Every structure is written in structure tokens, then in C-alpha cells.
Amino acid sequence: MIKNICCIGAGYVGGPTMAIIAQKCPNIKVTVVDLNEERIAAWNDADVSNIPIYEPGLSEIVAESRGRNLFFSTEVDKAIDEAEMIFISVNTPTKTYGVGKGMAADLKYIELCARQIARVAKTNKIVVEKSTLPVRTASAIKDILDHTGNGVKFQILSNPEFLAEGTAVEDLLAPDRVLIGGDSSNEGQQAVQLLVDVYSNWVPKDKILTTNVWSSELSKLTANAFLAQRVSSINAMSELCEKTGADVNEVAKAIGMDSRIGSKFLKSSVGFGGSCFQKDILNLVYIAQSYGLNEVADYWEQVIIMNDHQKRRFAKNIIKTLYNTVSGKKIAFLGWAFKKDTNDTRESAAIYVADYLLSEQAKISVYDPKVNEKQILFDLDYLESRNESDNKSGVSVLENPYKVCENAHAIAVLTEWDEFKTYDWQKIYDSMLKPAFIFDGRNLLNKEKLEKIGFVYQSIGS
Ligand code: UDX
Ligand code: ADP
Image 1 (tube, rainbow, N blue to C red):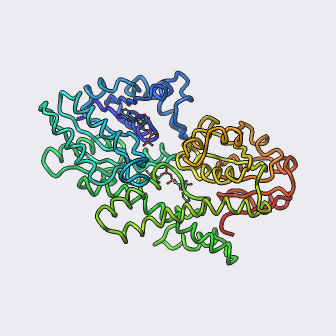
Image 2 (cartoon, rainbow, N blue to C red):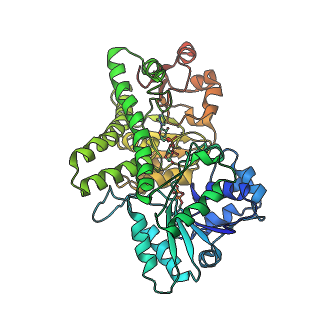
Image 3 (spheres, rainbow, N blue to C red):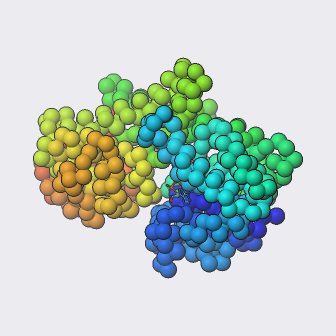
């Protein structure tokens, strides 16, 4: 039985996952470590509503276990030394340099973790890959760990996380499945069983799937590629709907009722974002290319090409509708996060739409219930195409949505936050320049109601 777990990386995956393990396994001591002192301090904040990651229901769960069997710390070495099982939950961004730039996953953080574990470990350890990784990363980790020469034995497991942000707590409490990949040797199977035992504390046995390491690693990439493909497929149809007079919502409903297709993940939008979809598909494309499978690579790359097109198309349509110029015009952004119920903005469509409009000299004013100005400017500054001073002068971020819309030429809805539906839209209309446009990138708002008020309303795909 495992008594002591350490998780390296206190981010969107490591934080929530460990909070649930600690809640469901009160006999296991769980320590989450991170190099980022500010992040750890926020996880330890006396006011639990200040934890660094916003997820519905998460702060209550952290409050329950923190200080009992859940700990957040920057003492990485100490936590590694004490643990029998170490989860690696560090980020694996797309490489921004060198071979595979813009496509391959940058494994430097993973490698640093492996080297640190190798250096510190004095007793046998089970190392669990939690981060999404390219197929065969486990063997690289194993190589590093096995060549330390200090006699410690390591078992490497792959245990990809399938939680979606915004619903992390419910996904972790009742997962569709838990996937654990391990080595077929006796020791490997023993390690798999120890991790199965951890999850069995709350997950039904028939939902815990064990496979070999490579199948587990590739399943995660495949799941994300299939999900993203559905979004790009329906978004491709949205453009055709706009040209033909069909309504993409009606099409989605009609096809979704076919049980072979299913109704989920058919919401047409301004484009998918998030830390996983684009990164994982690029990674898949890169892996396929590196095996010389060019048709396979091109097939999956099209999902990304379609998504980029959808974001650009949304921005171009705003410009075209506003009489072919947005120069000096105020465009109000409702939402910046890549989806509702999260404060995560990685790869959010809002960033790219803003970039496009700013390069046409628009003035952008942003409101998001969970994202602050610092983050929004950081996201824009990060783009190679933009510079800091232009971002500062072109973008304003306010905590009041009504102020954000005041004197705007148009509103763009970028995130499907529920609260947007409850606004006093008459009041917003009265404060805007006329004609007052709404570009609903999430098909969130009520078209009839808004048109009755006087808005010119445009959704995606109709
Ligand atoms: C995804 C996977 O769902 C999850 O299993 C994996 O562990 C990590 O990647 P996440 O990125 O957190 O999760 O959110 P998800 O709900 O998948 O949404 C991704 C993006 O697709 C969002 O921008 C969302 O708005 C968009 N989307 C999703 C659509 O535009 N339409 C849909 O129908 C569904
Ligand atoms: P994810 O969405 O995969 O959880 P995040 O970026 O939210 O990604 O979290 C990853 C965390 O891992 C970050 O907080 C980062 O500081 C941390 N991290 C990266 N490398 C190391 C390392 N070598 N040791 C400890 N923490 C690390």
C-alpha cells in the first residue's frame, strides 16, 4: 500500500488531481511541489478562495484536506525523498526553438524532473507520468533514472489525465475511465497494481483500464485529437451553413441524435483553445512525420488549420461588418478564458481575435469574470506579432462588464460564461454607439431578444 505520494507541478492538472486523491485517500500523505513560489503560496493562502486555479468546487475540497494529508511546498527534494510514488505533472509546452519548433513537445521540464528524482532518490520509487507526453517518453525517463548508478530501482507508469478544465472536480470524482500503462514485468505489474489500489478508493474497478505504456501514452493524444476533430468538423460546417442558409445548431442537433455520432462536442464556436488540443495534435503530427507517415500527419494537421481559419474568419467578419474598418473603434470583449468556469487562458481564441483586431488598430476593452489585466496583457505580449507598448495602449481591462461595453461599436462574445446571459441587455444597448453589433462567438445569447432591443446580432453558423 502506498502511504506517501509526491506530485511535481502544482498546475491545472497536478493541483486538482492531488486534491481529490487526498480527499478520497485520507491515509495517504500527498505533497504537491512546485518551483514557482508564488503559486505554492497561493495554494497555501489562509483564504482558500485565493488558490491559484479556479475550478468549481475545488476550493472546498482543498479546504477539507489541506494541512491534514494534503500539503503544498517548494521543497521538491524533500518531497521526492519521502515519497514512494512520484507523479510528474509539469507543463510540456510546444517547442519554441530548434528542431520541431512549433510542433514537438518541449520535454525539458520533464527531463529536469527525471534528473532531480535520479539525484535525490535513496529508495525505490514508482514514477507516474501525468502530463501529456509524446509516445515513448517513458523510455527516455527510464533511461535517465536507470543510469544514476545509486542502486535505486524505478518503475515508470503512464497515467494520463482526462479531466477537462471547468469540470475538473466532477471529472476526477466520476471519471469515464482511469488509464494506467505499465511494464509487463512482474515489478511493472506490481507498480500498476499499487496505483490501481489508489484509484480503487473511489473509482469502480471496471473503469480502471490497464495497458502497456505506449498504448496509454498514445491514447491520451488520440482522445484529444478526436475531440478537437469534432469541434473542427462542426466549425467547418458552420461556414457552409452561413453560406447556404442552414443553421449549424439545427444540424448539430440532427446529427447528434444519431447514437453512433452522439450529441457532445458539437458546439460550433470561434475555435477551440486550451493547453491540450493544439499542442497534442501538433505533437501527433510531429510524431507521424518523424516516422515518415506524411498522409497521417497531414490528415491531423487539417484539424489545426481549420481551427486557425475559424478564429481568423471570426475576426475578419467583425471588420467586414463594421464597414471594413475597425481603426480607432472600440470593440468590447466579453470573456477571455478559453472556456467557461476556468481562469486558464492558454491558446484561448480571444488572444488571436484580439491580435487580429489590434493589428487593424481597433481599441479593445475586455471583461472576464476570472481573468485579470496582468494575464491578458501577458497573453498578448507573448505573441511574436505584438509589442508591449501597443498592447498597453490598445487594450483596457475592466472589472465591470457594463463599463466595458459603454460607447463600444461592437461586442464580441469569446467565452460562454453563464453570467453573460443574465445581463441587462437593454442597458448595454443604450450605452453603445449605433448601430450596436454583437458577434456571438459562442452562440450563447438569445438572438430574438437582442434583435428586439435593436442589436445587430451575428452568431456562428447561421
Ligand atoms: C481537453 C479534453 O476534453 C480533456 O479530456 C483533456 O484532459 C484536456 O483537454 P480542456 O482543454 O480542459 O480538456 O477543455 P474542453 O472542454 O475539451 O474544451 C477545449 C476547447 O474546445 C475549448 O476552447 C472549448 O470551448 C472548445 N469546444 C469544446 C468547442 O468549441 N465546442 C465544443 O463542442 C466543445
Ligand atoms: P498543467 O496544465 O499541465 O497542469 P501548468 O503550467 O498549469 O500545466 O503546471 C505545471 C507546473 O509545473 C507549473 O506550476 C511549473 O512551475 C511546474 N514545474 C515545471 N517544472 C518543474 C520542476 N522541475 N520542478 C517543480 N515544478 C515544476
